Length: 260
View 1: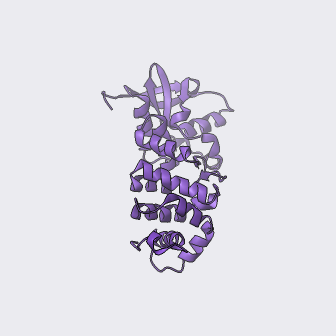
View 2: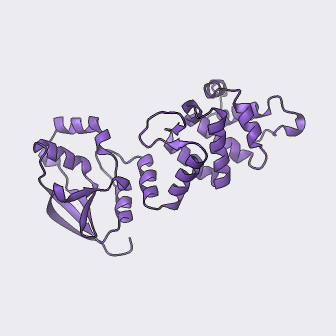
View 3: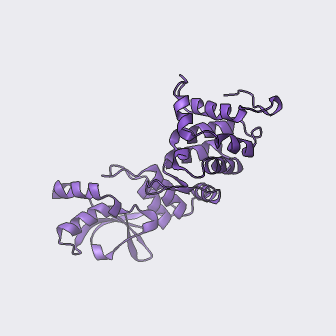
């Protein structure tokens, strides 16, 4: 944060507190948590809402669920709530406070962190989303399973950082997309990890079109099943299955050496 942040404890009306959708989770999707808090409500456990005062407006960055519960208990009407108001923050500052918060009733997931940072200009998060989508897959921020959607977002993010090469990551995404035509089974965590290790190990050696053609002949669930016979742990046993599929039927001059 570039400038000094001043904090005040103030009473604010909920009608004056804004929710920035780019920097928050969708509280309406957390129905089970809402119902539990309503059932076990204890006014002594209510913490102040964390609010950033930016350009004369109050933005909530921690406590959206608390506001929803308090309004529900007030017959849906707005009311005054205790707020911890931070003055001197930018929206990016507030986003960083949101993703680094501790002791919340609902943990901020890595998926939420990536989405929020990308919305506010973090270049690595932007590249991750842009390259994934440009090459045919979508990141399922809500966890909904669908064709071309990746729900194992944390695993995909870890592979993006491990590959650490935008062109190689683009190839990795195209292989996932084109090998199984966007079937969600091709974006399971085990497949993502195994293929990630394969492309890192054979960078500059494997041919993308050959890899796609070979993997089109083997279902993702068969890769996972066959990998279970391998007594090694981690991504290697899945990478080995990709390696074996790649080399199957290849002439000697086109076969990859076993470097796994």
